[in-house]
Image (cartoon, rainbow, N blue to C red; front, side, top):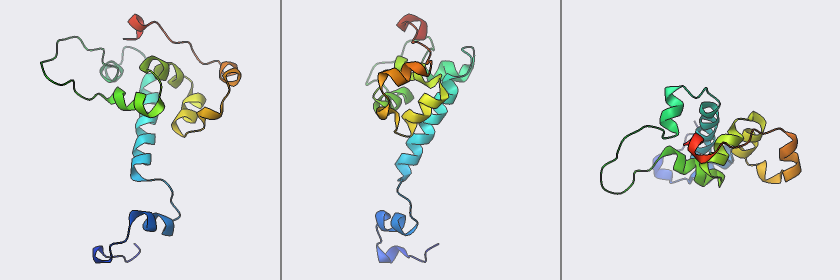
Length: 126
């Protein structure tokens, strides 16, 4: 696009500045994964994709290191517990603010005005 060859060794930051882009690829991936998580959490509970995503599948796993789960990254990125993330994703506006980073500016009173559904008990959720 810009006519830059690999031999010129131009950094990604320089290319993003030329295109006036500030987001990195990882930012875009994080936003999309968080958006799809919110979309799936708003689905009815009997949907298979929701059951698989939230880890509600019965069974015993084998020995060894626990595998990375998709929900581990969600809780890491949002700094919320899984229960809180599922609860907040039920409200599209609040979840959008979390995904795009403006949620930290909300006060507790503003969050309550938006009528965010309350979190279910741990046994009901998991």
